[in-house]
Length: 149
Image (cartoon, rainbow, N blue to C red):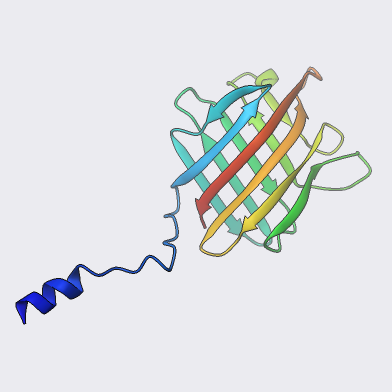
């Protein structure tokens, strides 16, 4: 009987993926062609039809994607023309100065975010071009994220 109990205790199922815990996960991207990885924290929050995924590194740099009117898996536009009224955006913050924050706010840049997994975990890819307050552009490409929600 003791052998049976040990046998059952050692059995686990790998058929069902375990969701990430909130605050854990991964986020990577290329910023103007240079590799970047969130090493400090990755977090996803879903509330009131909005999904926000953000990651930060040990040097105070942060990457953020916010999707308004979030409905689950699919492709969402970030930023766009000033006339679009789209509140979804991508943001890269390279430091504490206002000129070190680049945003796709409507009329400032544009891109896309594709959410491929939306239950238990949120997972997807993104890319965007964004501008800072001096109208200098940054290119964020090959972005990916996975986080618990």
